[in-house]
Image (cartoon, rainbow, N blue to C red; front, side):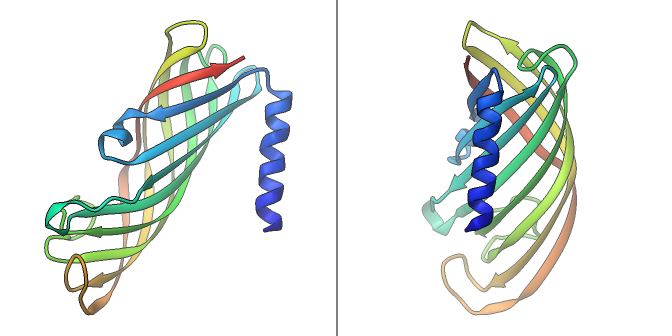
Length: 185
């Protein structure tokens, strides 16, 4: 609990010293029914710190589910100025998942099975923000890197006997974003 309080105080301190703070949502995640919210703080004229959280609690017909939570902190270096134009990024990620009866390409196959576990990773990214108005931006970003996942496999998507454990290292896209951004000045 002490660590969480220290992290929150750190971000509050950043927001006090920063001249700009932005809140955002990634519409690509929204399209997958994943609820998400991001907050970005300017910490220097060309540097920002972004923290996004994603959560999907939904289950669909035929026992299909892509339940997960994910946190992605990111440091961004802007070529012009913060919240304007091109940027390069370094991000980390971590979360847990419960996926069943879907073919996502990351796991061997979740058709007729359920995978439950955790993941962590890191990557680099490139993005661009378009200024739409005094407080509104449109952000685009693509990132690539590594994700390590550990899971337990179960017999069927909803219930079933444990069938073993597995792990996988994935190299590829680790972030994709089309974000609607509101900048608080």
